[in-house]
Image 1 (tube, rainbow, N blue to C red):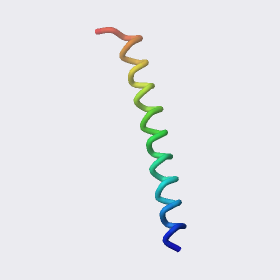
Image 2: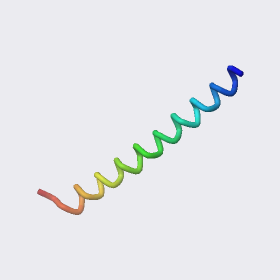
Image 3: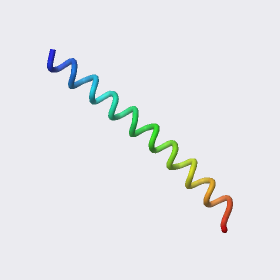
Length: 36
């Protein structure tokens, strides 16, 4: 039971890290394409 919760938490963390990375890359791309 504890292992299942641990696995789910790990998957959620990895998923949110992936989303964060994607958003960060998009923002970086926008800033590099539009220099102020």
